[in-house]
Amino acid sequence: MTPDPTQVQVRAACAADAPAIAALYNHHVLHTTITFEDTAVSGSDIEQRIAACAAHGLPWLIAHERESLLGYAYGGQWRTRAAYRFAAESTIYLTPQASGQGLGTRLYNALLAELRSRSLHCAIGGIALPNAASVALHEKLGFRQVAHFQQVGFKLGRWIDVGYWQLLL
Image (cartoon, rainbow, N blue to C red; front, side, top):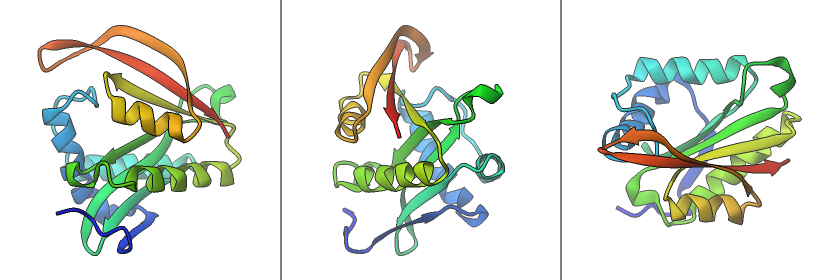
């Protein structure tokens, strides 16, 4: 069912959201190449990931309509060395039915606003290629491509390129 944009809300994720986030993510883990994980994760795994972002002062947001999770986005550590502390890796996942409805733009804009409010300097998005929709979303929001690595991942029987897009906040 297509989400009703007037009913979609964006808020900070909490531990109770972890099982639904895991279910959404596991669809991509098991059936797509947009994540390089290849084993399903548990709600407990996601709960730990949400807590890790929070421990570093980074946001994790969800978009939902009533009780139905439609997507999530978060800022993770770009690298662990201290000099990287003003950069965040931005990540977004949507349910298949929520894609192409403008929700990605809304959720990503909310994430970018949260990153800016935390005085971060840049956001870096990694995209498994090809992925025209994700490239279009990033570029619509002002990201520009800064890297392209060829055949760095192998999943679902094929080699996958990865590109990186950066936005100075």
